[in-house]
Image (cartoon, rainbow, N blue to C red):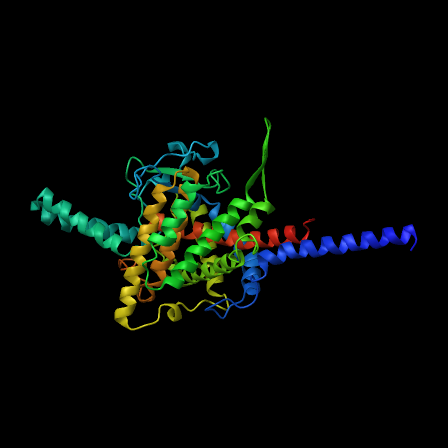
Length: 433
């Protein structure tokens, strides 16, 4: 063999080795992220196309609007589960709250008079207040009890704990200026949070469904942290981008004892659950009396139109998850399962107050509240379908603004994760090892 032939052979073998290694890197993470999903008629490829081409662009446009970007949250709630609780000192854990002048006046006001239907609602409320004057003889103690009963009724329908938005501790946060990304928060403190969620809350009857939802949420968060990682920092700039090694540590089959690809499949299960909730909630937002009120009539009307387009698109998905198969059983079992899920996810939302990194706490609270709201919708199908179209009738099913903002932003995070998988798949395929 001549020297030239030897060199060509060596280069050829090296090329084959690199191609095989690169292919292996992608395969080890995505080997199970294909084909039909468990408990579903849907497949991964259909979700990828639907999300990346249709849902994601429209959803991102909606989430950049004032109604959805400003989220009111209390990041100072004490941890209810353990006392050795400290605050993260890392600079990237900090959250910058809004100043009063940065928040649209409409979000700080409860008034809305955009339409005749809304004005009729206001008149009905004023009539009710006049009729309520008959009860002026009620003692302050009785009035307080009535208010507590109403608060209890509202909270009994929820699957998560919501912050008291009227508390002085609650502040508006601009989600676009406080993006979810890697902060350096890790180690025993971070693992204690996830262990508490996985282990202490695994009292749920439908353990498998519960685990897949939480695993999908965990996977989604890990994808965000890997996709927006601090790659370089100097006096002039900070460079954030995709950290392939970090992604591999979390999802490579060989580095996670075979669990990584399963976690990614659970992300798609979570996607289908929340997509189904968006399809189910369409009648609530179609009511003429509902407004995305920020005090800017033209923009608010445009954003409601965009919202309805998104929800109709979600409804058009051809292979929706059938939640009745998951929550099957007689009426007594269904009621027990609903209460079980409520208790479980309320506990999870309380665990978020134990997260020491404020940036992580912000996005953890928002995403668990969003998932809890999606479950509330799926368990309230009859109330939503029976919702009257007349604007002067108060529907039995209600969503607070906090629930609405968390619902869509939480789905926005999952949608982003699904899209980022394409980026990581490409990066891993081109990886030289």
